[in-house]
Image 1 (cartoon, rainbow, N blue to C red):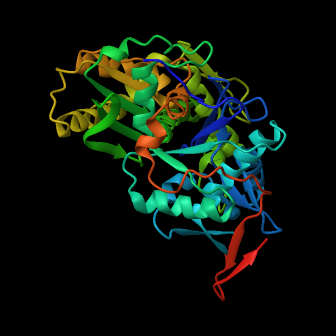
Image 2 (image 1 turned 180 degrees about the vertical axis):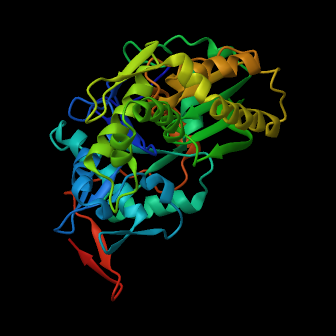
Length: 404
């Protein structure tokens, strides 16, 4: 398949993979795909917060503000998206769609500024396969109110499948010559802050969802972090139980020390994707505590079984058998955990494809020819304008919109 990501010279296209915990984005320009960097980081936290002036903060700034103002931050807005959904941020009610679009608008503004303010020819928003027109319509309306009309929408597994089926023109991308081009069906297992499994078939050369996607938004990286936390607790409690209790017992608000420990636990769990052991430092203790990959995988065995069960359900709903698959591909940050690939390979008798960067498949695939147009759910294809970052909030006492 010949890839043409930008048919008109000088145009550029933006794809945003709005994740539960982190957002990734990619740009198609000059018939190539490049990843968007956020201050040197390949991902942006999906978190949003409302500051003292009523402005919506996004990304790392939102998380920083939330450390001292915990009631003003929404760390995973994607979980709250539904028709008309609202949340309370520091006593003010805001539309969830508005804060989602705040993240989108930040990326759009920053990328346009790198191109002398020139707007993109298209903005593609990637969403869960379980979303309906209600969710995408909500995001589309909020985007239009910010001067971003005509969003294209594509389901995340469809975009990931295009990345694997069609090959990717991004420099150095491991899927540049993917053998998935010959696969009949492709199972996409997207394991991040949540878990989604979708079976994909080809339809007129483009990927199409087979059966019904299976998803568990309440199961993801946080659950695996809890297994790491349990292992750490065993060691720390044995060394000094009173100190561990003082760090972890219920407080009116999470302490900075506990937040630091949890951050280190997440980093340690990610480190075990490439190393056989990791050391975790805990405030107040004189020595770090070592956790090995083997004991982590043993502690998380039931979690991996839960992942396989959901995968087998999606396969069955597509009318297939778990042992008759031609290809399995992974996406999402947690899929880097070696046990994810190992357990799936054992149960499905297929070695899953694993991208070098698990956040790449969705954003890259959304930029490939035909996929956005085929899956677009709303809006005309007008060139979006790029405006200043102003957001609407409203006062719940009188339900009157205030423009900040």
